[in-house]
Image (cartoon, one colour):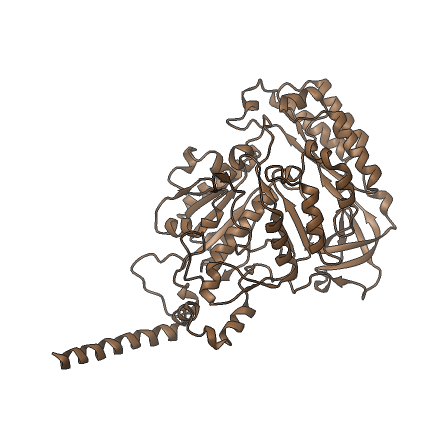
Length: 578
């Protein structure tokens, strides 16, 4: 599995809102990108930079929480009139959303900034690197969007295209209490239109000595159950919901239609800690969320650290057995050695992790347990490493994320005596060899399984589906299968996947309640609503109508003639009066 994730969306050009309240952060009014409406051969002549007429290339590195932030930023920019493009060379501005977990991720981020500057592009940076280390030399004079300020991306980009440097790094607070971040009902462009990534909280309660993310995301702050359930309902049902959003002011509409997804991912730095700051907990949230999941659609729970999931084992068993929840849990162990875990400040021992895995495997038959391991943490002895090897041999994790230790600046682990690089590399290689020595899916050949198809394979040869245990099943690449729950028979197994043959060509069920958006479309601004609005006489004189009128070349000419005529009439009247 790749360490780096990209958010790259197809070209879109959207109109934008014309009104926003000062006490809420909304997309700002601007003129539409008139270039897309000019007849062939004509050019738009302007004397100064007009924000909102530019193309923006958005790239995201890192975890699913970061991906969700990137989706929200792209959606707001598109709704505000910017043209989101996957062609980096053609973009006027690059929005780079960074990850600070490991050195390679930051290296990619730094190289992207350098490449953009070499091509004379405007650059805006976001994410955990720029939040945690805004004074780094390579970030000098760049505009920065803090991880809690993504709802102000339009403002920052507006200023950046005019050549100004803006930095918004503050924390959101209400009544003196830190908020988890931006509102959940903002426009977004989903990387995968079938999957809603929902951040349930930000930050965590731990103080791991190797972690830089805590410097960026801070302490735990959770969204309310009501907010999360409402967002999930909107994502699945595609219903109209009243919203206080600049997009509504633009269109003059009473609601915004959302399009249905068929998979919901819950994400955060530690989902298991959800609610501890607001007097609730993860099982209570999940109990409410499963009520909103339509038949055949699925929920995937994100990473949870061992200490908090241990508090709710019985309740979590019931949730993971639910037919609309993947029997899958990502629980990073990081090391099989208690002495290393203590130096990491992980707040559990290896026996507790083993008990957790054994309990879940017994009570949720077939469950997939994914975990992470760091090789070469400062002070790790050969005996410590062999204990980690023994843990992997015992459980043969089907999904194992192996990471060579990288000292991150400003963390306690960076100040500890380091293990030589060649030993870290050797241990990483040895653990990787062990992982690849077993095949977790061979015994499943011949099984009949129900799978949900949600994406295309990396090599574009198959569609990717997942069974109840979130195991990857490749199925024929046929457009009519996308977004459907199918029954297949497994005929081949590899290290990371299985291949399935359709058992009944007509049995596939499309699970989303509403038709999903096309890839690259903005959730919350749809062509159907534009058409509905155009047919509504009550909205004919709304601010949105005015801006759409001006965005059309003929409309702009007529408006100019009308102004000239009005000026002449006024002058004539004044002359008669005098």
